[in-house]
Length: 250
Image (tube, rainbow, N blue to C red; front, side, top):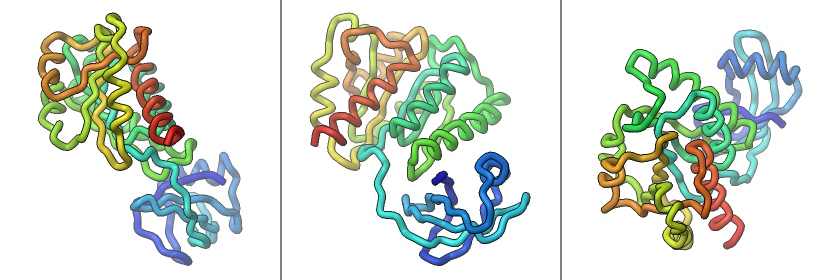
């Protein structure tokens, strides 16, 4: 069954109205749902219910929760991917795949070596598009929550937030060039459920020396394997490794 999201609290046998135009179009035109069909809805606090469609038109789809589902599809650790801005198609692809792999949040950052520039006028439209991509990926991959995304014009804004995280991981290509892999493996072995992890990834040109120096006393600066990964690939490698370590090996 198709998954959807509602930013509301829910109980069994309660009725709700889905009014998001994209969701309505997807339900009625793409999936061709009719009254009596069932869907899955994720509510606040990762509460998931099977719901029956009671009424439907182009303005709203009325549903009633009929069964509470005991499922857990979220990554046990909350990973925030803070990455330098890269070319639009590559960044959007990364957002989609990282959402599928369980990223908790995203931070798009204008870094010193970012080829792509985003000004205050363009940022709101970009964020709107990115939010749509993330939402659709969350629905497709049966996530129970939609990752948030924010934009900052300087990495220093992210530095000011580091106290929120249990672990800070900076993926630095110079470490990979030197063959360093032990720090990443050590960090993975320390992770526990509900930990908050900040994953820092540079743009196409990598981090500047100043950006590395900003975090070097607070972050684990690591290489991700023996090969040099593209900016859009590095977050996916890290998320996959975290998932393998904490979901499959324990």
